[in-house]
Length: 180
Image: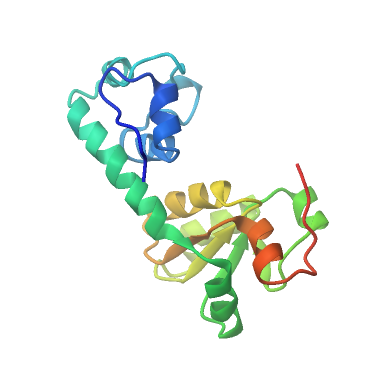
């Protein structure tokens, strides 16, 4: 949970520092911060950003950011839980890293999420209740992927907390650790 308090006059850099998932939350609900046309500057206040994007209720936005932090925590799953679900064949494990990262290290049983596979999944190849766990290097990109799929109607998605790095440390030491 964030330890500092944010207000309507907080700069976006302060908001993102206090609530690392705030940008994901803002984009998911208000289409703020996901691209150059809906972006903001670190020094802009939350109130300014809301005004620029015709979002009138800044207090609602603050509450949404706080609740989104809880959702991020609920979306996360520990590597040891993932290994149990993989063994029982109860999940599909999708790796959202780049090809070169996959080549450096990958988890047996995982599938690299290519654009083609994502398109197939999002357009009906997998039922919306498919149990999917996303993973990346440290757990941030996979959290973005889980939130994205959740926003597209998938109801059983998670993100592996700590990514493949945590997997290597906690589950399978034979999976090489690497730096980017």
